[in-house]
Image 1 (tube, helix red, strand yellow):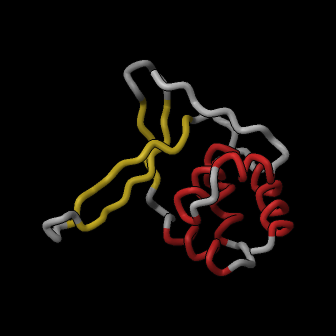
Image 2: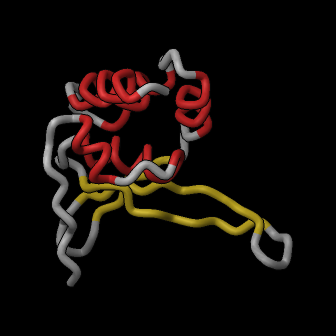
Length: 117
């Protein structure tokens, strides 16, 4: 994908208000690799509330472990109410190893590294 096409896609995704809407746009993308990656994630997101009352979105997937058995993994993607750029950056990093700061830059935004607690 050309840089200009990437920037156009990221900006279009940032106009969406939720992860499901952004995922639908990604699934309909003209770039076959992006569309395939997005389609493969359908149904792999889960919502859970933390003890502090924060609703978090998780990516739930299975992979073979060292013993050859399927093991379920859960990865925090974003919190409900976060700007959709958080999901967009996560998607492009996990699927295509595009750094978060590069995705934010394509959207015309500045990436701020999350503080560690």
